[in-house]
Amino acid sequence: MVNKASVHKLVKAIKEDLNFKIADLTINFINSDKLQELNRKHLKHNYPTDIITFNYSGSLSNLDGEIFISFEDAIINSKKYRVSLNNELIRLIIHGILHLLGYNDKTASEKKIMKSLENQLTYKNIFTLL
Image 1 (cartoon, helix red, strand yellow):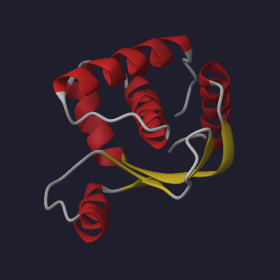
Image 2: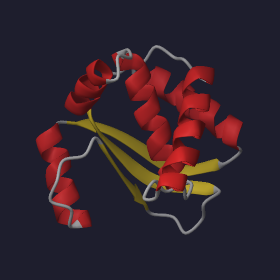
Image 3: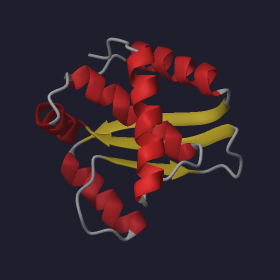
Image 4: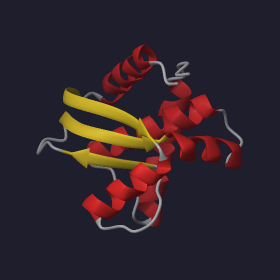
């Protein structure tokens, strides 16, 4: 399973890179069925996803939120994109943090910006999470 201490180190490094504070941040690794249930219940989206974020803060510089990641989908994505599971988990954590910081990926231009930041931060912050 995921090494919590390494996740904390990764989050700390991202926090320093992007210069924000954390009031409270919880990262949950759950199965895909549970994540789809959360997606349907809270976001009214009836389709699978690999990550969901909930922002409980009104401030983008002082994070208070939760990130839910499907470990099963991370495994599938790592094979699909031919990256290690470790790198895929790092990318998903970064993706969730970027959402909590106000980044979106609804339009092509937003996706391009977010993907660029994800790639930059992923390869700058390689930690062993497993």
